[in-house]
Image (tube, rainbow, N blue to C red; front, side, top):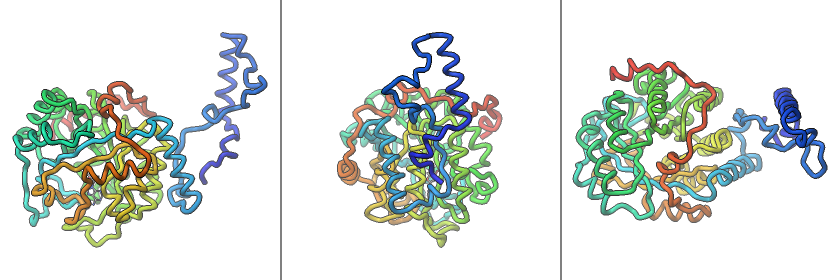
Length: 399
Ligand code: 5AD
């Protein structure tokens, strides 16, 4: 069960030890601090002192009604405390739907022979982002299927142009690449790498034919973080056959990783995939995962993903913004390419500038003037529970 306010005031042994140690230390250092907790007017033990890090439970993830509203409210407040009412606003350009991977959930998988494949043109994409981007965006995310050809021909030169001609912060979401590619992308001017772990169970990961192996994916996350990238990861909620324990395992894994942000995407039964007939993720479970993610890591940047509006047409996205999400994305992909960028359904829900701005205004949020990249530069990612020293450079170099 979720710990309510009453439960939160109960001292755990660990906390007692912490307070005792703290008192011993302060007594030795500064006599004014002796018995500070017994002084009148100071609450005996305040929440930040005794609260342990939040970790969700099945009851939290499945909550509904009043409990669910309270959960989402707590998440909204946690985000507001850390980030104010501001959300980061980025544009995304999808530059290639070629993909060498074969993920069962994704319509761009290499076995989908019915999909017309395209790569964006460098000159057109640069023109769009340099001269015709929405004024409110501070960052751009350059995204593609796993396609090293487009990385070399379009992404690297595009980043260099954007770096020279715009103040945009630059994220990339390009899949598992070689260490030398990562280095080239970074030296060109990108600073945020988005690489989802998708699902925390290695056997499940393999069953989904997700890229490489889970171990390899995690090695790449560690490698990216160790080489100076701000890394955002994420998982897909409610993949077919995923029970609540498997969902919780995603949180246990996420909190151990050296991340600056993390997303929750509802599973959408993708057109032209082996999972096309499977049930879609429930919106409530997805939103509860988002809220839990915010409470687990108040400092993380958590996006509201466009698929929320597929999980609950009309409302999913707005409700996502009430669970402590603090990053929104305007889709800038030219319409001819967009149609075949088949992540979910042919009938995509495109987050236009107008839709995004009206959704955030309706939720009492406003666009941040500071770019996400600048924010990260000024705020170092806190240390994680497990720093993993050994990085499997060998696998990374072999890709
Ligand atoms: N449902 C939910 N998320 C998906 N993704 C791809 N296909 C689906 C799907 N059917 C997400 C994966 C991937 C990202 C680009 O899109 O998390 O990493």
